[in-house]
Image 1: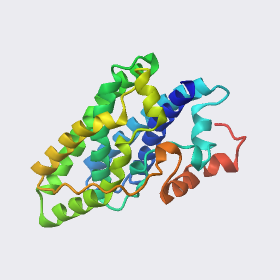
Image 2 (image 1 turned 30 degrees about the horizontal axis):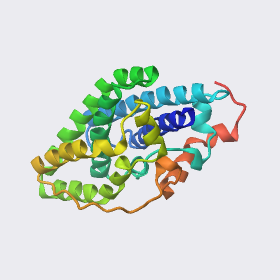
Image 3 (image 1 turned 120 degrees about the vertical axis):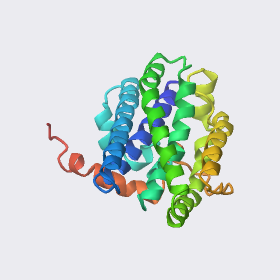
Image 4 (image 1 turned 45 degrees about the vertical axis):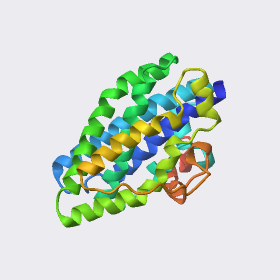
Length: 250
């Protein structure tokens, strides 16, 4: 069970880490100053959540740290979801990706408030206020774009259409999910789908955005160590200096 617990913490930590990195890439490029500050704060919240889960994974593994897990692991050792790896195509894509993940995070972290693992419970209690704020923000933006101009509606619709295929991974169970559920540490991923769909569909309907059809594009997922082409480029940038100067200290 220890191996699966480490794997689960890496999944949550890596997903928040990579999504935070994507947001950092967009820093200073938002359409208005207020949004630039807001999205940067979301990225910092996600980075904090990533650090907490990676610290716990490092403690369970022993003889490593959250920094080493971040900067010295190979691509195949990461467990981040495919959705968070997608590029910052435009503002609509960034918001659509964030909205889909925010809905997922709110449902998941509320379930984790019942975890039998005290550390995961503590991280979730700390994160839930941030998660709720993230969803409020992205939910508002989906409606603003969907109900805005013809162009803004078209862009957010295209983003939802293109990103939708990545959402099937959020609700696919693997051996780690089964172990976490059996030991009452975390819920089955599949158990989150109905509530997520209800939440997402409600906002999209209110925003005059059509819900895409489900497309199961892959059976090899990030949570199992199989990644999109995008992750390698992210890690090349993120890990460049630590790998170039492995003995450097701050």
